[in-house]
Length: 65
Image (tube, rainbow, N blue to C red):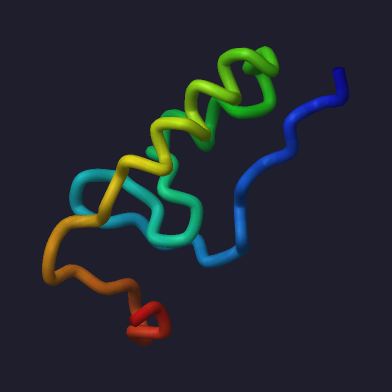
């Protein structure tokens, strides 16, 4: 099995709940990504599909609408 790559899309701003507007990972998940197994990475990716950012918050520049 090949390594699961980071879901980062280079839009790195987090809301007040520490969830990235770009990849929907938490700061802790981002920081630990390189130490995770493929199984752990897949769990994180699965969680990102169910996450949303804090209602009403936007990253600087409001480029994500």
